[in-house]
Amino acid sequence: ETGVTQTPRHLVMGMTNKKSLKCEQHLGHNAMYWYKQSAKKPLELMFVYNFKEQTENNSVPSRFSPECPNSSHLFLHLHTLQPEDSALYLCASSLSRGGPPLEQYFGPGTRLTVT
Amino acid sequence: GQQLNQSPQSMFIQEGEDVSMNCTSSSIFNTWLWYKQDPGEGPVLLIALYKAGELTSNGRLTAQFGITRKDSFLNISASIPSDVGIYFCAGPINYQLIWGAGTKLIIKP
Image: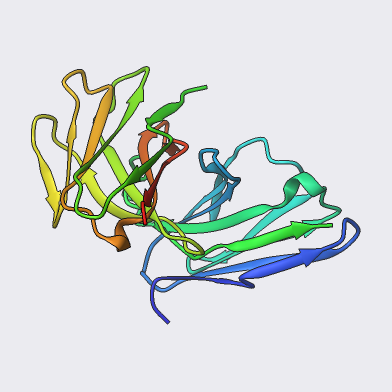
């Protein structure tokens, strides 16, 4: 595998379900990100991890819970979601040198539908 | 909060036409990034701009800072069918990237 991979690619879940999204990067990067993408809107940054430590949480509801066990893997645990949480969830990674993130590399995303 | 405004929101073009789109901000950026997203995929970095005044190219794509550095332009010459997609601009603020809402490029049949 190369680049950034995400599984599953599609997910349909009920509001009472618990599921997890997985992201893996094979680029040797040290920073990873979760974004939410809704149609015709800018990408919304959800969480940032640098060297496995969470450095940003952009006021994301607690029904989204990230986990970063190492620099290559990132999870997004989902529980009791709402229909408005339906979107494309993108994972990205970058090489952090202590400054602002510049070139980020994205996975293909997980298309989530909450019924 | 800070926003990047992209225009146009969508473009219908004929194959072979040149394309121009832009991205504006209320504040100065020292770095501009242009990404493209194909259907069913994540965004892919096309061009990174680090130096105002320089034209940066990637094949048929060129990008540059605007004069005020509060904007950036992306041009595509002699468009081909695989150019369709959504083009996003992004810039760093406070150790994060903020994004425009995208310009959707559509090839007229």
